[in-house]
Structure formats: structure tokens, C-alpha cells
Image 1 (cartoon, one colour):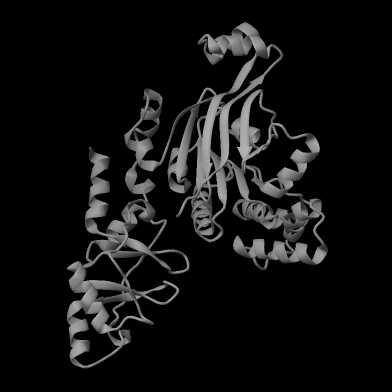
Image 2 (cartoon, helix red, strand yellow; image 1 turned 120 degrees about the vertical axis):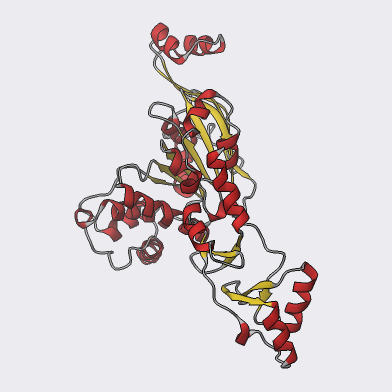
Length: 398
């Protein structure tokens, strides 16, 4: 997934709860711990000196145990909780300096939120719940219906528009909450432990659905969780919090292999890479591919010789994966004076972008060629070799 420029910047952010904040800040500067400050002043440190740069199109995960400050930090970003000190910039706009009216309008335009406990109105249908944010924005009825219907389709609930929340499973209720956030066409999705109340199987399905949906919508998402496996599965980058502080920020590999302190080391100690890493983490780009609408056998042979390979993957003009060709068949097609590849394309197994290493290993074991990786629309994304998988699996035994 291509990531862009920094869109959300948090600088030296603090949030303290209690009356004697000045004294508490002074004690923080002097090196007192969160517990010591609470004992001396009655002030609770929610967030301490947080700094973040969140980039366009990424799922940025903030994770930590209960009381670490992760949900408080999320709510400081859109000022549902007022920061005590520090700066927050969204699209280069200083939201700390906004008055209440400016902030309210900015929130409506920029942020969609998904909550742990769904937050659905029990007396409204699925459609009515999804439309709610648009009603607040005074969107006209026809446009409201159009946007809501599209959001419901995106989360896989078409046909359920007239159902009431009481008739939905937990996973379906959370899909409604996600659709409501998508319908308002906000630039940023703030997701506060959205799947933590779900059963494990439903939770896994929702994680997969979010990953697939993100490939389509390319939103900037801030995702809160206490589950490291979940953080590693859905996140592009992760910030780990403890006692209100961000103790480390990094991508999967940095978090797993470059722990900055004992707290992070303990967190990642028992992580099973085969369950956490997926195809996106280990796939590579091919030297080249063939396009069926423009490349014939002679072009295929030229490319194979140029890259010293005996196979190539074939896609249509939209980069949807069709199969692969091998050099023997290409040479035979040239001898038979064929000008197209259609008759010699071989079908093969594919891997989805979110498949874990265990699944990938079982798929590639008997393959003579690398495993093509495709997204939910069957668009070609990259390839995986046996070496890719074995190298990553072996690290679990290091």
C-alpha cells in the first residue's frame, strides 16, 4: 500500500486529569512516575509527551494495556478530550486553536468514529443508523440514501438495510458502525478497539474485512487495540504505549526485532510470526509481468531471456491475474507462429494479501514457481518464493 505525506501530526501532547495540573507537570519534568504524581497531587497522567506523525493512507495502530492512555490519546486527536498541553495538526490545520464552532464543523468534515460497543440506535434500522451522521450534516434525503446504500454495500450488508439492530449479530452491528463512519466520507477513521467485544472467529473475519476494505478506500485510519496480534495484522505502523507514554513506534519488523526496552521485549516475546505475518509483509515485486492485450510470445521470450527466468505471470489490462506462461510453451508458440498468449496460459494457485505464513507455506510447498499474490479483486500485487516463507518462519526459532 502506497503511503503518502504526513497528514496528522501530534507534538509534545499531554493530558492530565485532576485539579493540580501545574504541580503535576512540574513533577513530571523532575522525573516522578505516574504513580508518584497521583499519590502526591491526585492528578492522573493520561498522556505524557506524545509525538506522532501519521501518514496518508496508512492504518496506524496505537496499542497498549488497559490504562496505558491509548484511547485518551485518540480522543485528544479530535479533541473529544481536551489536551492539557501540546499541539495537534490535521491537514496542516492547528485544531487546538479552534473555537467550539470551528471544531464541530471540522470534526463533521474530517473524522468518522467506530466504537467498541457499536453505538447503534436501537430504534433505527440499519439504514437509519448509517444515515445518522449525514442527517447531522444536513445532507439532503436523496444523497443521504445514496451514500448510505454505498457504505452498506462496502461492508457487505446489502439486503439488511431495513433490519433493526436487535436482529444483528455482534459482527454485523460493528459493520453497521463502520458503514456509518464511511457514509460521511470523512478523510480519517478513528477506530477505538472496534473488534475487542467480538468472539474470536468474528473478530478475525472483521480484521480481514477491514484489510480488504482498506485496499479499496485507502483511508487514513487510527486503530486502537490492546492485542498485539491484532496490531500486527491490521497495522502498517504501530505505536506502543505504557503509563501514558509512547515507548516505541515502528513497522512490524521494527517492533518484533528492534525492541527499545524490556517492556516491548516482553510484549513481543511470544509472538508467532507464522500467525502474524501475512503475504503483504513478505511478498516481492517481479522483475516484470506480461499484459495479455499487448504482449505476445516474442515479447514474452525477450523478457524471460532479459531477466534470465523461465516463467512469467500474465495479467489483463487492469492488472487482474490470469495465470503464468513457461519458456518452453512460449518457444513452441513462436515456432507455430502464434501472436497471442491466450492458449498457453497456465492456471495456478494464488495467495490473498492477508493470508498468513502457515497458509502460504501449505500453498507453495509443491509449487515449481513463485506464488502470485492478489487482492480481493484478483489484482496482481506481487509474488512469494519458498525462500521468503522459510526465512520468516525460521525466525520463530531464533
